[in-house]
Length: 178
Image 1 (cartoon, rainbow, N blue to C red):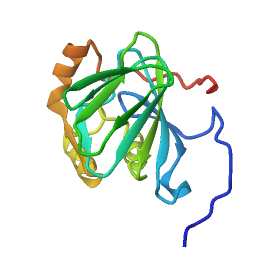
Image 2 (cartoon, rainbow, N blue to C red):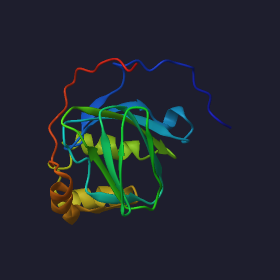
Image 3 (cartoon, one colour):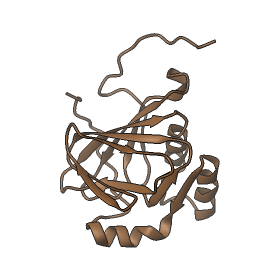
Image 4 (cartoon, helix red, strand yellow):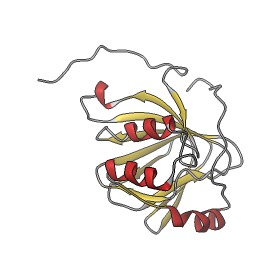
């Protein structure tokens, strides 16, 4: 039996906020609200911030919808840049990363399907973010969520795309999504 959920509006200031050590996260819709179909988070990114080392998800597809700013992405060997209104598809099993490709703040909506990986973000944020977690703890967390990560990719990504890692915490003040 499929659990029914009440209709609701998630406003521009609703949702738990966190910081992943590189970019922000606002939890908007979790898997418990969609019967596991998908989850939705917002990622505010400080200027020129690398979101994560090269990584790949074995269980989820990700879709990044750019609300404001410029998002760069490395998908396999392909480099993409997307602006407001663009949607970037990051299929499961493909090595990828993404970043703020501008000198201004960038915000994206991240759709994760199926749901579940948003819990990785929540746990990582609760631990203080990627830079506060010992490598063995991060490795165990990645394994639990079927995420393969290549931390050794960071220096090359920073140099290649002119980025910084870790990012700076983004402001807790959000503008309404229009």
